[in-house]
Length: 401
Image (cartoon, rainbow, N blue to C red; front, side, top):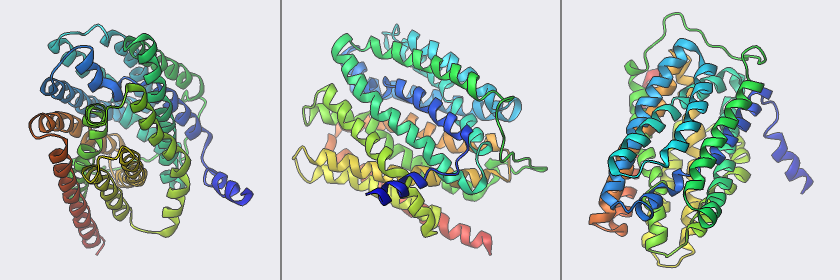
């Protein structure tokens, strides 16, 4: 047992103090974003919007994310990652509080667009900061530590969110989201001010390659869009499936989603360290992750037993904790020959675009065809994504030759 514990602790060794601080800031921020997992339920139950209307609102969520990520990448290359992260956190905090006062369809579409425009400017800046604070050999593990912080926050957030909804209602979530964003901004100001940190890998390229002219990155982008499309069903249609098909309460939904975060927190770092040591191609590992997420959907059609929900979310979590760190690491490596902000924004935009289409199409599908058909379609789409990643692997081999 002691050896197992020491091996687990050793997977965290060698990461810089700055990466640890960035992880803590991300944890505080992510713990507070508890509105998001319950957003479709809030829109349906409190504001009484139909499934198609919720789908359109989630499209505006994604549209704001696309523009925010693009703007964040541009600003990161112009004014630096620190300023972009700080401004994004402070403004997002206030915007989350104001969002609770949007009650009509048009108001909420505009409100969620503006919130995501500001909030997702943080993402490319954070990725560039992470790269700067990490030694080259530690970048995949640094990404994994950030993800551990996200998932620990995700584990705590929905569980606490369920309690807040039960106790004081949905408005409590908006206040909590806003306050935690501002707290994360103050911590960033205190511990990661440029005068206080040590940059370990500052990449400066004389003639940077544009991410938009990198053909393999475009193939990767399409695969990540598909992965995002499939994965994001867990944040819109899946909570409705839990409630309408298996009759779970908001608290039970929060605990089930919290299980995912806890599972990832406990097992992701050792798994990533083991996979890194295996020397398997990053692209193959991303394909494996997407395959596992696909299986998490199709098994839901095999039985009405409620325990399949736990099996499904653990399969999804395993796929997620393989695919996300290695896709992040692939993008960071590719970005070292170009404008880092642009590359990391392009990577993040694949998920932002998925937000536009994933929630909306998912809502339309379950409204017209039901959950079972929707899960079959999503599984088939996942397999297409796996094939695209295998094609990318072939393309990269030709590039080396």
